Length: 120
Image (cartoon, rainbow, N blue to C red):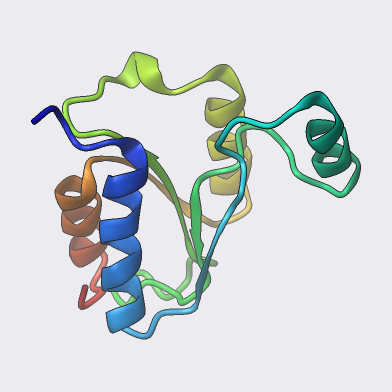
């Protein structure tokens, strides 16, 4: 059996976020789409690079922050896996008062959220 996929890692994080009853949403940027569906998503507001999960509940250890933007990567990933568009979004969100995390696997992401005081 190979490494978990980014999707399976994200699903594990989502289960923990739901169990902790945090206010969050997933951003539907991933997946394969045909050209027509891609155009429809683009005109309806889907933007490349937006982090995978947006947690609107303020971090307990940093309540002055707006929330947490979590970009998921598979475990064993590396910083070069982060795209230019993702880096740009992270920089803009941080400038607006968000905490941005790149989670290399579910365990890494959950550990970072626990460090912020979330009980996940």
